[in-house]
Image 1 (cartoon, rainbow, N blue to C red):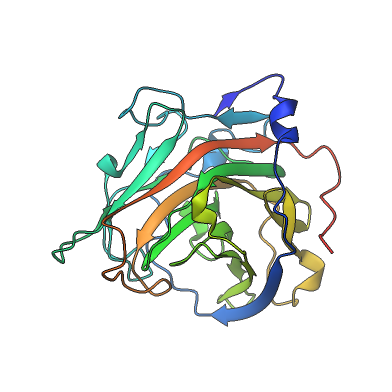
Image 2 (cartoon, one colour; image 1 turned 180 degrees about the vertical axis):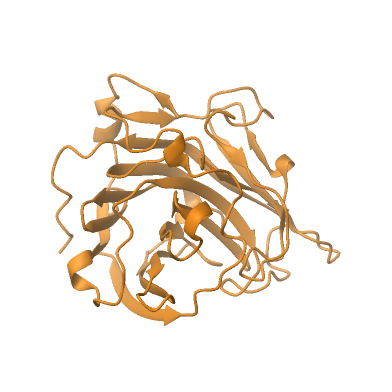
Amino acid sequence: MRRRVPLRRAALAAVALLAVVATATGCIAETDASRSGQSPSSAPSDTALGAAPSGAVEDTFDGPAGSKPNAAVWTIQTGGGGWGNKELQTYTEDAVSLDGDGHLVIEARIPKDGGSPTSGRITTQGHYSFTYGTLTARIRIPDGKGLLPAFWLLGDSISLVGWPKSGEIDVVETPASTTSTHHNLHGPTTAGNAWNVATGVRWPTPLSEDFHDYAIVKSPGTLQWLVDGKVVYTVTKSQLPARYEWVFDAPFHILFSLAVGGNWPGAPDKTTPAVAKMIIDWVRYEPLTSPTPAPSP
C-alpha cells in the first residue's frame, strides 16, 4: 500500500449511506479446530511492517491493463485442493490483474462443460498488516449461485500457531447472493476448538449493482463492521463467553478471494455466470484516532 499524506478528506466525506435500516441477525457457534488451506507458507507480516503505521495509506490499483498488483504489497496465492471448505476452484495467477482503470479484478471462470473452475485470491501477508484502525475497501461484488466473494483478515501469527488460534475477521462475504451480507469472527477456545460469531444483513437491492464500501474498525477489545459508513455489527471482548479467547488485539493482514462452490455457497448451477468478476476500486487504512462509530439504532 502506498502512503498518501494528506489523505483526501473529500473522498471520505463522499461516502454514501444506504437509505435503509438493515435487519441483522446474530449467531454463535463452536466447532472442531481443524481447517486446512488457511495457513500460507510465508513468514508472519509482523516481521515486515508490524503494527499500523502512523499515517493513512491506500492502494488505488493504478497500472496498465493486464498488469499485476504491486508485488511489494500483494501476493497472489495459487492452487486447489478445496482450501479447507471443499471449494471447487483452482486459484491461478491469471485470475488476478489490474484493468487499467484503477481497479483490481479477481475473475472466476466456471466452464459450462463441467471443467474445473479457476479464480483468484490475494493477500498482504508478509508485506502489510495493522493492529488498530479502520480498513475500508470499495468493491463491486458479483452475484451467482455457488460464488463466495470475500474481503477478510487473518492474524499474522497464522504461520506460527495455525487456524483458529491466529483469528479470522470476515469483513464481508456474500455466499450465492448479494441481497445479504455476512460478517463473521472466528477464534480459538480455551479447549483448542474454534468458535464463531456472526451476523447477516439483508439489503433491499443486490449490492452487485454498484460499488459499496466495506469496513472493519479494530480498537482494543472491540470490532465494528460497516457497510457504506453504516455500522451493521459490533463484537466486544467483554460480551463473549470466558472460554472464547480474544486474539484480535494483534496485527492482521488482508485477503481478497472469490471462491467457487464448497460447504457454504454450494455448487454453481446453470444460472451461474461463466465469468464472474470481483472488482476492487481501492483499499484504505486509517489509524485509530477517535472513538469507534456509535452502533446504528
